[in-house]
Length: 507
Image 1 (cartoon, helix red, strand yellow):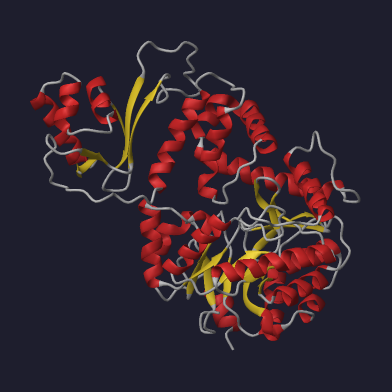
Image 2 (cartoon, helix red, strand yellow):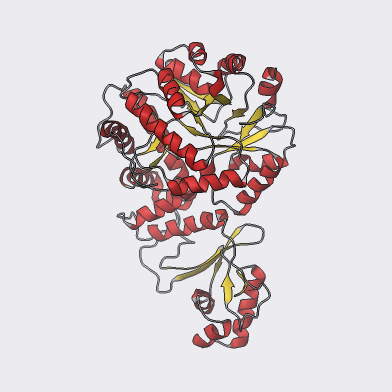
C-alpha cells in the first residue's frame, strides 16, 4: 500500500514523457504506468522511465491479465510483471475486474458476467496472481455499457469478489458515476456499500455523453464537476487515498500543477491445468465473438443494440489506433477502405497471444504471413515499418565483447539493435504515390540500427557490405577472404561500421 501522503498521481503515458521529465518533483506525488506498455521497452522510452522512477514512486495498473478470462493465466507474463514491479520498486499493482481475451487478446475490457460462477472463477484467479506475484493486488471497478447474463448487482459482485479473493479495491470514481447513469443506480449508495478497509487508491477521469442515459468512459477529456463532487463523497467515506488522474490523449499542459489543486488542496484533510465452467466460458465467448466479427456472430441476448455499438466502436477504435500508429505508410498506401477491411479481418480471424501492447504490431506482421494480401509488397512493407519500432523500443543488451578488438582477427559483433535486411520490393519508396507491380531485379539491401542518440537509422547497403554483415560466423579476415574481398577495403568498411555503433566490437 502507498503511504497516505502520496495523494496525487498522474498516469505515465509516452505522449507526456517530455513534459514529465522536465517537470519538478513537487508537481505530483507519484506516477502510474501500465506494465504492458513498458515491459521489455528500452531506448529513449526505457531511459525516460528509469529516470522518472528515480524521482517519483511508481504504481502499476495492468491491462492484459484478463482476470475473468477463460484461458489459463499467462505465467510467463506474470513473471515479466513481477520482474518489472521489483525492478521499479512498485508499491501498488492493480488490474481491471474484467476479461480481455477469448482464445486470443482483444486489447480492451469486457464485463465479467455478474454471476456466482464468475465470482468463484475470478476470485480463484486473483488468488493465483497474488501468490505468483507474492503481493496483494487491487482490482478496479470498470465502466460497462451492457451486462450480459447478469444475475446480481455490480456492487454485490464486486463485494463477493473482494471477500473471496481477499484483495484490495482500486476505486474508479468516474466509472461509478458513468455506470450509475447508464444502469440507473445511485452512485452515493454504491459508495456507501463498499468497505473502506478494502479501498487502497482511486482514479478520476473524463467521459462523454453518447445519450442522456449512456455515458462513455474516456481518458481524453477533463474530469467533470459531477465526478469531482462524487470524488469528494468518496474521500469523506474512504479518506484521502492516492488518486490518479487518467489521461490517454488530448493532453493539457502539465505546467501549473493542473492535477494537484483538484486533489491535494481540495481534499487533503500459464497453460497448465486450469478448468473453467463451460457456461461462463460460453457467455464470455459469445460477447467476444460478436465484438470481433459482428457480421457473422450473434450478440448476447437481451442487450440493447446501442450499448453493444459502444463496445464495438471502442474495441475497434483501440486496435485500429494501435495498428495505424505502427503502420502509417501501409495505411496510406492501401487507402481507407482497404485498410479498415484489413484491420477488421485481423481482429476477426487472428488470435494474438501477446499481452503486451508494444507487441501488437509484431502480431499483425505474423497475421499477414498467412493472409491473402492486398498487394504483393504488403508483407515486406509491414516488416519494414515494424522493424523501426521494434529496434526503437528494444531493451536488448550486448553480450560480453571487446569494444576495441581487432576486426580482422576477431569475430565482429553486430549490435543487438541493428539488423541487416534484404527485401524483394523497394519498401522504402512504397506509399500512396508509388506502388510497384513488378519485382525489381535487384533486391533492396538495408541496414537498420539504433544509434547512440537512440534514434533508428536506415541506410542502403552495397552488396559487399550486406554479405559481410550477413555472415554470422568467422573472423573478419575469414569473412572477407570467403567473399573474395580486398582486406584493406573490408577493414575500412568494418572500422566505419564500428564508428557508427553498428559493430560494437569483437568476440
